[in-house]
Image 1 (tube, helix red, strand yellow):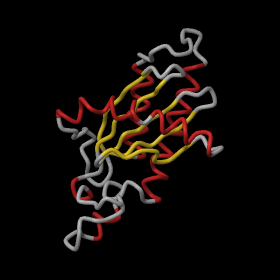
Image 2 (tube, rainbow, N blue to C red):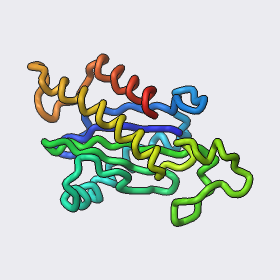
Image 3 (cartoon, one colour):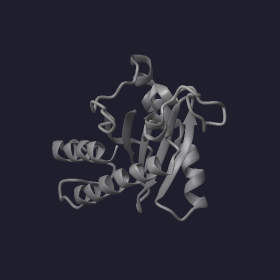
Length: 175
């Protein structure tokens, strides 16, 4: 599974972006977005902001789960207390790419039991939701530490290599 993570500020401006792949189930940790899809990642996340604003007032939760789907890409969202949005675009592996319009299917009778229970096979499964939630919570913890820095002001782009390494480590740990 490939992931594109972005933190969106209060003025809908991107503050941080990171692209990575799964490290679980024998993944290499590299994203496998096609070159054409790589150019669309920012657009997909930004277009889901309207849906995020609708969903955020409907639930009192910080983790909003999957808020949008664009073709075979899913967008999960985590809202902070000061209206920063953590958006994670995840593209399932090709084994799950043959889903129906309802979005909850398998690749058919040829899929093995191992691929059907892996996180990459079904991005809407409870295991995948829990892994994404754990990832978001760890990134949120690191985000709060970044906000407490006297050198950071609200809606400023995050360029810290330490923060980027911690996001990458959380991705390897949970996703």
